[in-house]
Length: 189
Image (cartoon, rainbow, N blue to C red):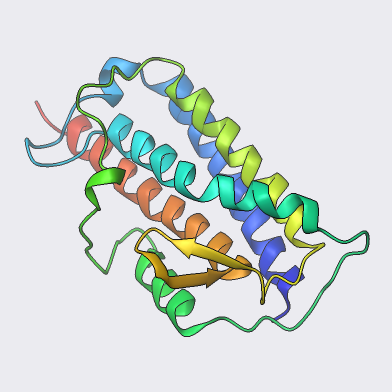
């Protein structure tokens, strides 16, 4: 697989995500999205807030690469790093199931004191569009060599291609979780 093939797949997944969140926005009120399926489970709105908090860790690093982008696009053989490959595999859902359960770092937990407004989904759709921008930018960089610091810290780094792949897989994982949450709530009496 080449970096351009991966980026094309990621852009397709982003387009599906934008459709998903637009449908969510017209189908459910913010009050419905804030309902938890169980006391210790996240609501759909909390999942979205978590996705925003996670993106906020990575976006400044992507932004910093803008000035290093070349004029020409650089398609190349994709060479995932061990850590990136492992994290993408861990994040990516299998159909409608999340197979690898994970705990969330405290700094990425939804903030319980934050009021989640009706603009939450619009804000996240803006983030999804920013991913599109970063993927277009990545085509002008050596996406295998550029490094992005993971949420774990500088000891574990992604390649730019792995970081984008991981974050889009993370998005897909939480789309599954949102669907499961809303399904549980819709089936409650």
